[in-house]
Image (cartoon, rainbow, N blue to C red; front, side):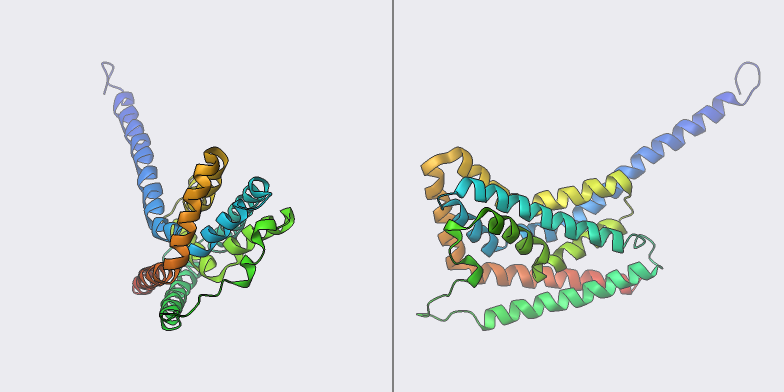
Length: 253
């Protein structure tokens, strides 16, 4: 009570405490969401073939234009996929909800699929002396049209099965962390930016680096081509095990 015996001061103290607790409470949720999606975002960013593709596009006669369009398509594809998952699993922050159960079963299936893809990729890896065939979509990337560069970016990011599984798992984890509205949009945006960092970084290096950048990017492309199988298998197995474990853990709650 104050000097007049009123309860104003204690009440004000309780209100201030509630406001401070709300401010502190929001940040851990957002941090938890960021941490949950980070492995999947890095896995998308480290996928070898999109990086090889963007380097080939940048080496063409319309490299600057097509590179920017490919990067725009890549970001758009990831953004659309993540937004759709966030809407679909909007109630997954409730552990007892149907959305949460679907998300957990989806992780189990996605994790198992990623592990199978990794094992299959290693089993079918090129043996010593065998020539590695480039995927069909890489043909004539150096003279791709503007529309093809944009569409390819969208398809390789948002419609690629591996990326789609990783994006779905990451976005479901963000939703389950309990962030909403601005926090949810911020977490999804950070996921898209991290997952796009290698593609966007390659375009940025090409735009500012000139011929020196072209030599560097070509050496990156050669490294990715040479080690694409090992990189892909490691990413698939580690992320598959992580996603599968998260799904099983969620089902056991």
